Amino acid sequence: MTDLATPVAPMRPGPSWRRAAPALLGYAAVRALGLAVLAVWSAARDESALRLLSARWDSLWYSRVAELGYGYEVRLPNGDVHSNLAFFPLLPWLERAVSAVSPLSHADAGLLVSWVASLAAAWGVFAVADHVYGRRAGVCAVLVWAVLPVGVVQSMAYSESLFTALAAWSLYAVLTGRWLTAGLLASLAGLTRPVGAAVVAAVWVTALASFVRERCVRVEDGASRWRRALAMLIAPLGAAGYVLWVGRRTGGGPLGYLDVQAGWRNGFDGGYAFARFVAEKFTSFPSALAGLGLTAGVGLLVWLYVICVRQRQPLPLLVYAGVVSALALCASSYFGSKPRLLLPAFPLLLPLALALARLRTSRSAWVLGGVAVASAVYGAWWLNGSGPP
Image 1: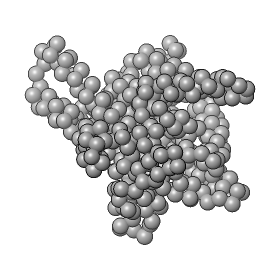
Image 2 (image 1 turned 60 degrees about the horizontal axis):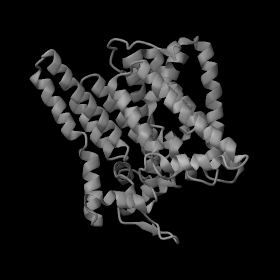
Image 3 (image 1 turned 135 degrees about the vertical axis):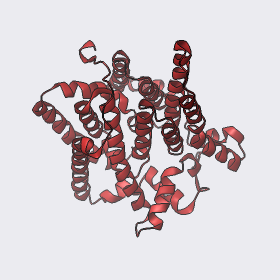
Image 4 (image 1 turned 90 degrees about the vertical axis):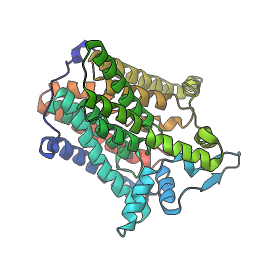
């Protein structure tokens, strides 16, 4: 791990389009490759790639919220109730707005929103990595995020791209002292996914740490203190507002949203259910191989986070990545979706980006190109499979 240790760089120039252009062009190329492979694979199976991207699984729930509003639910034979109240409203709102001013259906509008948001997310990832480690590391960070095995989700009408864009730019605002912007973006992230709590936590912990540091060194900056305090007030408003609205609508009070999630058999149990799921894989062969893969995956996440700590990543990045990872791994259901739930935890990729940035450009290009092809093939196979991502 010490081979990857890199000190935090001083303040970098602002994230202009021109500075971010190599990262954004590379990102667009990777996503275009993934969509091309998906189109060919789906056509060979007489399947619609457009339907897989915009009108299946969670994307179908989002488009129904945009078209019909909240209140739709599915009652399963085992008694479970799947309510669309489980899906946060920002993406459906945007789908409805785009569909209202264009000929696009709600599903196609969701796809357009996701594609635009994915570019904004890539730019935000670049801005954060560039600010902390420099431009070359920023480009590599974006490309590593693009070539993740579940990277195809970035091109789906899901909320991951929108959330990552809001989270990355909120973190960048914290890093650069733009507290009101950070609070507003954190609030919008909280309207996008439950994991918006990770962005709120990053804003709160960093602001509190700065208050303590100023008190220790006896620094007085009234204007900055008020901006930080206001950011702390604004940051949780999005998530809190939606959760309280759901509680009022369902009659469940402040915990009503948890009841909605329970209908989906989803909750937070500290990782017990996931640990039991992994342990059960070792009871037979060849499922034991899947158990080994899952164990190695969790170990890799822990290892990367340890490296992030040893590299002394800025506090907001460590808090954010830690909370996103904890919420994903400790959820009690939908184990196959955990790689997708970890997609927004981009600070965990910075050690890999730094390692690639140290290589010669030709070598890093070969590495990323090979992984991009593998990711595109895996994404096409995954979406054409039987289960939701």
